[in-house]
Image (tube, rainbow over all chains, first blue to last red):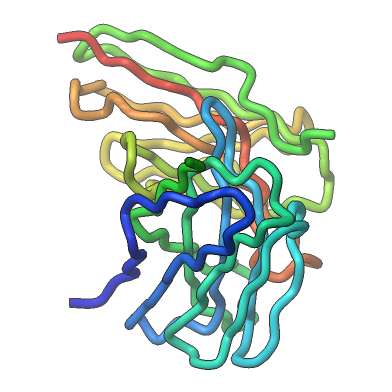
Length: 116
Length: 113
């Protein structure tokens, strides 16, 4: 059945290490997004991609990098430059058909990143 | 500067009564609004949306009201059920921003049996 998968569910990062969070969707959605949620706060946009091989920075892109080599996949790398990486990371996807009514974003189950 | 605000961090309601969750926004370019429900350690799930051409949208127990002049929207859940206990996020989108969503900080709803 169709959906968005994120792996791993929990990820531990050591000091100075880069880690990559996986996001895959089989919904044939055009756009994909990465958000970060901190305790008691809303979701903040890190990066988004509307088409393969193209992506844009969101509100808090510093210390993160992404790639979009395939329509189904949008991995997020948390680099050592991200000084406060502990958070819950959510991936989402949506259709983009340009209609006046915006397409709903659908979310994956999330990855919790913890720093050792 | 928060463009979407949910001023009540938590709300407690008795089972069977109405739950009203509120959301305010400042960006007049927002023209599409959504509510998401989120359980701990899970991704948000879409609940209901409303376009700025409407002032009300209903789906079962859930109704969203939009007051454009006040830049305010609310989600009504009636009757409330214990399974509705979760964090609710409102989100807004602007026509000139593609499909980008700006989220509020969330309201934790607790429905007591």
